[in-house]
Amino acid sequence: MSDTVEIGTDSTPNAPVHGHCAVTTTATPLTVSGLAPGRITRGILIRAPGAADLSGGNSAIVFVGGPAVTADNNVGTGGIPLPPGCAIELPCRDPSTVYVIVPAGSSSQDVAWLGA
Image 1 (cartoon, rainbow, N blue to C red):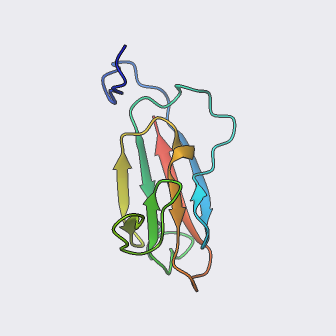
Image 2 (cartoon, helix red, strand yellow; image 1 turned 90 degrees about the vertical axis):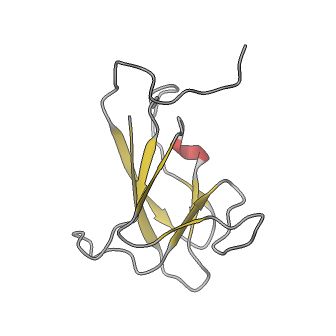
């Protein structure tokens, strides 16, 4: 039995699932409600709303990572910065394993995610 996960090899795509997550100064998993195990097989796209979005967009950089992610460039814990209007695609089957955080002093921000 292999521990390898292959993303994007299923020729029968699922209908997309999506959500939004409020991002605060505490590392928070992407919000998932009622998502069946194995529902996402191709990965997820995470986007920080930008100035052109209906909401007016984020005002702070969101950092993306695992449960110990920090909003900085710390070698061991610093997340991937996601500035307003930018997106990142991750080969991930469970959005709740991805955490987001904003720097101290930032107001609550938003990220949208889409998986299939």
